[in-house]
Length: 90
Length: 174
Length: 172
Image (tube, rainbow over all chains, first blue to last red; front, side):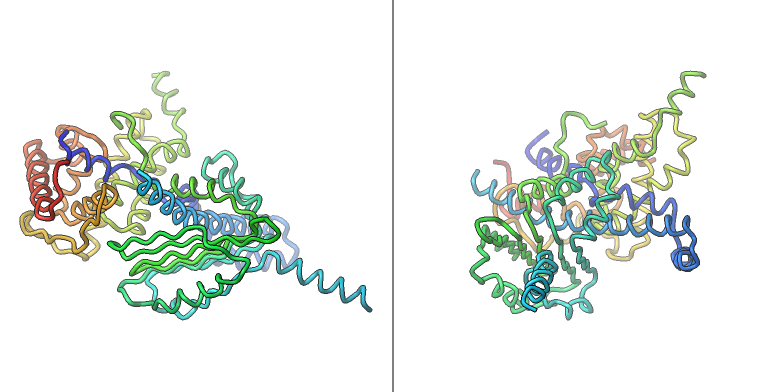
């Protein structure tokens, strides 16, 4: 490989998708339509325990996805600073 | 009466410990953005979310450990189709709040070629880090973060590197 | 027969996703140069894997299958999106941003240059330098003749060298 090919191999090195990717794929495998959330809320109000459990799970999944995305954003900015500093030091 | 007042003030103070530590005032950019991310997670939401983080997933396990010391996460991030959608004054209003005595700038990176700027600020109270602010501006992207609590910057940076950097190839990748 | 069944039973969807998500996402991202669309495309690939898991015989087969589907889905996604018209290789416009200094900037510039190549040469270059495939493997993955693959790579490299030299970026 000449210098350009080596640079290309580095530039095109694999990159992980955003945090929570696996969860997002699984959510599409088992989609929860809005009507289900509404139905679950109604059942909860009528005293449906299982519906509450499912709704609770769904809310938890959403909260988790928010946390993962937030950490990705903040972490990537910090990492960029770190990489720039390392580049300066070198 | 006085003990009640003290109790009430204590409750208010405790409730606001996890609250956002400076104002973003960026709502006006939402309508201009092609993509935006807006999150406000207080302690109870973080604790709730932590229950659903899978300890067997390496990424989620790292985040679960990281948020133990964090009491609040507040982020607004915008992507715009064109340059000039936000003004330097929008960022300056935030920066002015960080000039308060309890805040100090840890590092600032400016890249003239890409016209990008990232600043990291830390909030210190009684010798302890109680918050972090990250301001990141590019011609078509603006991100402001406030992480409240004792933030492990190094771990968070490593996490960001894992998420964002390419895997270093080790020989033939088949 | 028993061995094959055992191998199939050992295929865990979660494990396959963890092992190959970087490869799938990166093919899409380097090809489409759009993070959201690349994420969506990568998700589609794994949803497709879930549907066809019973057809996958071994972990190695899964990797090959995923790479092939990632290539197909990325090309499909680009065709649906009407962002850039197809141009001849020689007429590809240069990005407006030039590297200020150092390798990180060059990497970004190379990625942008790759993203402006026509579809087939672009994918051939990604499979060559991201996945380290040889031309025969690229031809099999993309379903095009070996000679075409070699031509795509040679011409793309020549064009990249020419554009970089014009910017004063060359061999160190």
